[in-house]
Image (cartoon, rainbow, N blue to C red):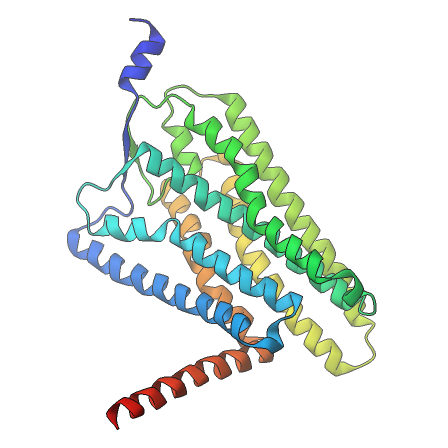
Length: 324
């Protein structure tokens, strides 16, 4: 039997996600904590998406992009968190090979899409503040529709090559991933053979994507800040700074954590540090985004109150009719 036959025979069919090893009581505590976090994330982002959809006053490019970004956040957290919650209640903590790489693909594709949406939102703010007279002519319905389609699809197109390359690595065992999700670095560490070509392509893609998108966003907001400083009215400056500040907070939260993790996977962060960093950008950042955008935006707060206040009144009115 040659080496390739042995590798095929010994190739793993599933992985074990260790998650956060602890006692059963603590696993239940983790389940409750992360379930509440996940629920709040869904509710916050869904509230923004529903407000943008229902309130015609928010049917502008900035809010349409924000609504799509909130939907993207829901997809992003849903790609990993439900499986993590199920593992807290499971004793096997097993995930099939195909399911593991499917999770890997969707999680990182949605993550790439987030980076592109942040770029698109920065470009929109640049046009609105630096080119206000030309903004309606440039940011047409056709353009921002195309940008939305680009933002949703580009991550899925770009990341499929990397997922295929990593899935083709030989996995002969062990099959235990000391993580709560199928992450790229732990998966590559489980490979029987060290493929420097795949690692180099992966690192180059991450560096190009993260540094490129991050610099694009920083340059866009640098130009925006210069334009805001030159504004004649204090009210205009406050409104522009408030909008840009909320966007920049989200940018630094997202890119700061993923750059620590993925630009240089060869640095091999300790396992517990990897889990904490991944937890931060996969759960905490999506939870914070609705708070950041809604608390600093009067139009969004008013729209949420109008939409959900109307829904509550409608439900109360309907219940009164049923009682009568």
